[in-house]
Length: 137
Image 1 (cartoon, rainbow, N blue to C red):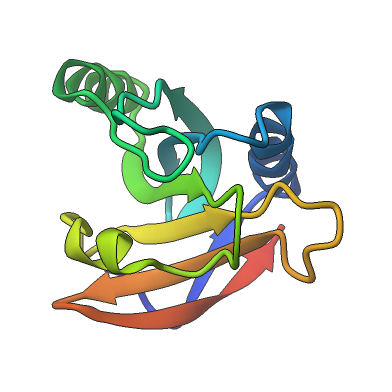
Image 2 (cartoon, one colour):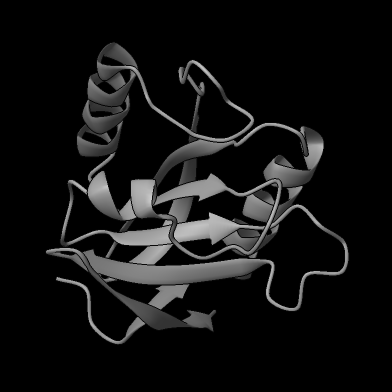
């Protein structure tokens, strides 16, 4: 269950920014796993969207494979992430419409060097968004 804050390791935060900057013209995406309410792992996915410059989608087969990997490692899904190459790293209308996992935190990463907060997290439930405080361990 998502609360007003989310915890992750500094390593995970660095990995997210690094991945977003690797291909700054495309939205990167993937899952975030951990246990005891601390995100400790990044599971990158292939962006299968028809226009990866403006949207993201994880193919069902890959999503199921990543979920199986998490369970096999004794981890749980704590977050879903993607980047916004252009504009602010806050949920778009499409992001809100497609927030199918209400208990997961949704991370939006900015690949821009001048981003005030390159990593932001949100709770998205029933069409409402709340920004979460990120606590780095």
